[in-house]
Image 1 (cartoon, rainbow, N blue to C red):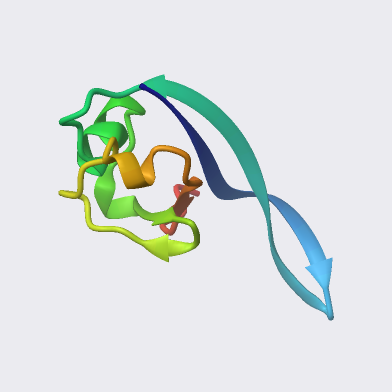
Image 2 (image 1 turned 180 degrees about the horizontal axis):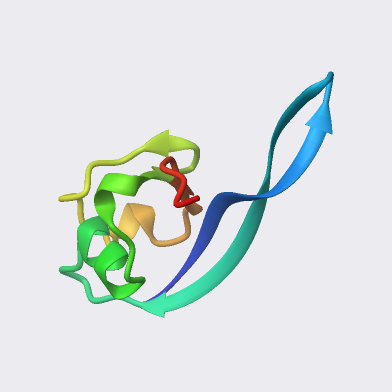
Length: 87
């Protein structure tokens, strides 16, 4: 099954209300997953450290050990948000 994942990270500086912060960048990737693959395996395939991100399905956090390819999850939106900066 092909899974589309949105990767969100902070890379571009911006100024809002006098505060310097980060504007998120979004990258979309498609990867092949097996029926038995978990979100931990997805992170591994994307070469992402699971301690640096939060995985969301339809805007809600999911555990790393949950299977991605469950029929009820097949068409749902998966977003990975980097929570640790590597600056």
